[in-house]
Image (cartoon, rainbow, N blue to C red; front, side):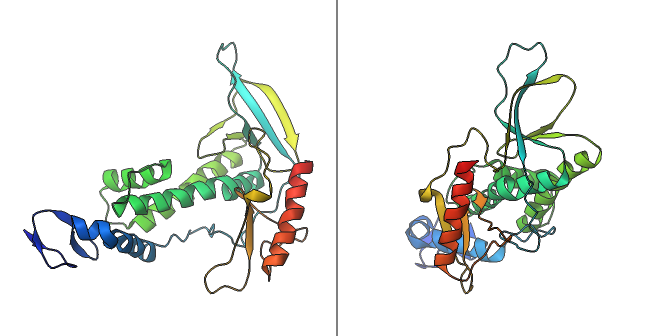
Length: 256
């Protein structure tokens, strides 16, 4: 038997959390949210490499064009792969990381926190990766440290291959592979906008403008993509400015 921290009743079972032990009723009626908030405050994800979003100083310059390909193995009867970004430079790898892998990592970290808080089961690959590494490494490192190490490894592994002179095929998620002689390109599209051919063209409904708590600037995304104006700015002083630049960026996407 243990005493519930909230209702003070002695119960046989419940939830032993970092902020105390709670019976099932109290946990489900409010304490679950407080436990989740605790994890969010205690384990902020701050990347060692500086890939915290949005980050003006660390932003990678936008490549002028993007090459998307579908591939398959030579003499294979299987269908071609989904669209991949063909990356041959560090800039392309970093840009892909910021716009596609970054959102997957943030979603995975939030997923992990929800799982540890008892809110749900893991639904993302990155959340599972954090759990598996903690389990098999038998380490005392915090989840924050583990997540940062995985984030850095995700980027550095790709950059190391580029430095070795290899070209990469980058999916819209965490998956990637190297180009090798047994692959053939079955379809190819070169675009000025960083939007996979299989993705639906975004509309005004996909524009999301946010301002951080206590912040003085506004940031905008269209789907997964950070809005960048013609001068390279990713933040604006007013909501109106952010909205207007978002419409210009959207028009560029639609025209390309």
